[in-house]
Image 1 (cartoon, helix red, strand yellow):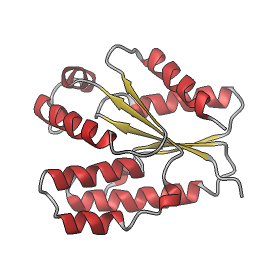
Image 2 (tube, one colour):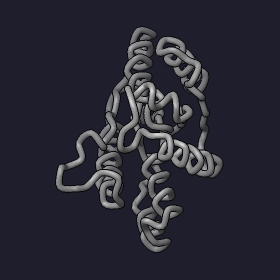
Image 3 (spheres, helix red, strand yellow):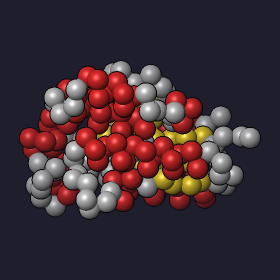
Length: 192
């Protein structure tokens, strides 16, 4: 069985992940590649589980892992993953660093990873708080200056620990078309 090339997108809220994934998928299809997109599991989080909690991250991790496992059996060239396993591990680390979970909880969580499902390539999109707020249309519960600033600091700390092929792209000065083109070209250079 030939496993599809897996590309995970992660990074700052409102950095352009979901929009870029849709646009890049279209570009890849136009180039003759077959592509499937795994949507962010947070969009399917049950109402009973509070967002931004340890349990929410666990639920999203298992949903994402199941989706990626299913996608490995797809007869496609590429799978584009909106916030995948590296992202859920970042949130686990973030919760550990913020004392939301214990070291033991985090270590138990990391044992749940199916390492064969980690992406072949990671694209991390980042943007400064002011741009994230502007793109969101104003500050909110998670998209506010304090949260995004703390998020970016922790994310960059985590990014240095990631041990797979990866690319960090600051999207602040990129329009939607430019962002999609930069990401598309970045992926094309990595394809086997």
